[in-house]
Length: 199
Image 1: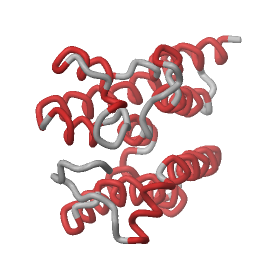
Image 2: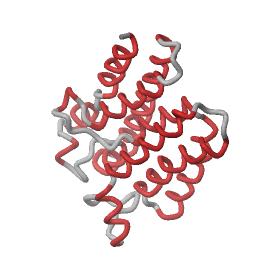
Image 3: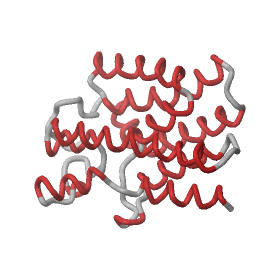
């Protein structure tokens, strides 16, 4: 029962859309009606600029961190923190407060992975950041991070087996959420970092 309550709390925490709220405060707009239509840090950068985007990115990462710690604080079961993290990501992607129209969950996933498996996340993050720096495709870097982190969890060892398959599930969901980005990457029409155009 306590695990269910933790997951519900994590989902409600994840459902807080900082991109939506900050856009409302700064420009009195619905961020989902502008740019790529995604309620996340990259679209916030495109529509509102660097400061709001950094705030959204940071707060979305913190959501993932706090969700995992809810599991650590209130349960002794090792799988519960990961499940809580997944629920926070689900909340970010499909927020109950905002008509179930959210973002793609990468920043929150970063918070979840970094809290649960720091070194695998660090290695995957370095590669992802390098790819963004070289190609200027944020979506590509995001996909690299979510795919490589569970791979590094497996390769480095020392983590519960559940982390590998739960991390793989997160990677699959993230790739599916980025399916339109993948199509544009393949076709060469994906927008690069800094472009003020619709993604």
